[in-house]
Length: 377
Image 1 (cartoon, rainbow, N blue to C red):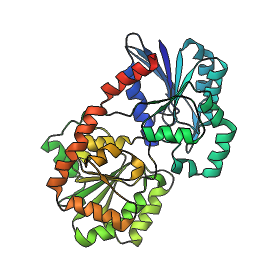
Image 2: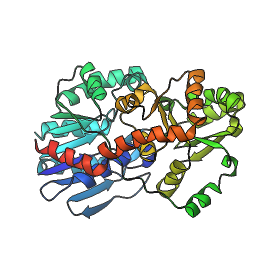
Image 3: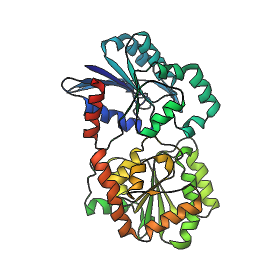
């Protein structure tokens, strides 16, 4: 069986899709299931391709502006080659290029799957609402109706699909992570030596794109209330800036007189991201909308107490008291975070519940098995 995985980008700055797709390709490919992957090269990168045991990967040049991406060479290649595949699996939506490819697949009588990655959640739909509404009615709705299956990350996302009037069958397969590898004391000391302002402080970690939907503004607004009871805290902001969101939040921090309490660390990956996860006391994601956050999975796997909003899902973990539910109201959020920070040994013990849950249910090796099984059904 031959599957073609398609995503519009590979740049980590665009978010979780760039991490999820290569992991799915790697873990789901097998002797009797070849999964090829096409996407666009980062920035103005040149076309290139690679071959692994059961997968061929090809990345095309593109033109892009903000979140608009188009590749003439990718569209042409797809049109010429799509019929050699048994199934095409598209990732993300509200992308003209992906819409065009889905139409080509349908006209070529090649069945396809769609993975929305949380982009049908109410907040995501309302953001730039009239544009998305128009695009949905003109193009995206028919693309969804023609899909063989909709791949969702959790049951709540399946409900979002149904609310849009889509009757195509859904399959629930979540995102995954790798096992969390601890760094030694020397590696950690070297990393944190670059951030002297964080020494001796309790570290609150925000790890996500700096984008309005992630709710970082509400976390910054909670800092003055936190500082009334916890004097020695610092907020670590890790992630790429989108648009001018960071600049607006910096102005907010200055207005609230908490700017010196925030360490803007930019985009971290590899050992640097492991170090910041391992060295933080609490992870907070006050998001308005999520598919299944890769950052939350990583934080839970690292054993950090995780405080997340209702929109982040993970209801089962919260019910088991393996994570903390927060509101975006600054005072309420501060109260929850204070309860965590004032007894960190107890909070870390509680966080082990979330850690066990992730390691049992969200390792990429297990996710790959589930996807292989679903493809063959």
